[in-house]
Length: 126
Image (cartoon, one colour):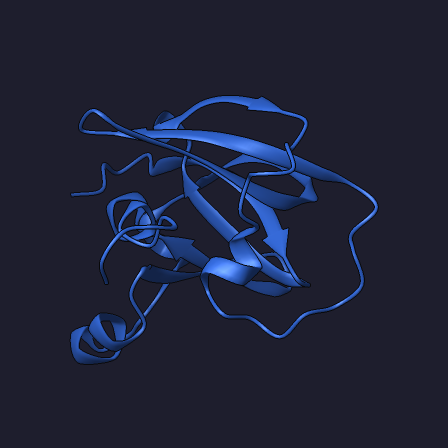
């Protein structure tokens, strides 16, 4: 449940698409390693040229950990209830691990479910 003040979100992109996820799921940021899967690959997004700025997110959720490479720029923001766009639950289930759509300035941000993202780790059964 979202509080009236919203949720702190880490914003980034993957292959040109704006994404965000709950900031409290990010343990730390680092330079990506050769073995860190790129979010674009995990989500089967169309490849584009390598971004000038990339970072590895160290994610943690209920004792599970994962590192994933994302494109910058990376920044923290807050998404409030007024920023959420309506979406049918059936649509969101089909788009897992997308949890919600949010408006930020002039763009739409795809908010990711960290648990759903962890389920896409290489070597995990889907």
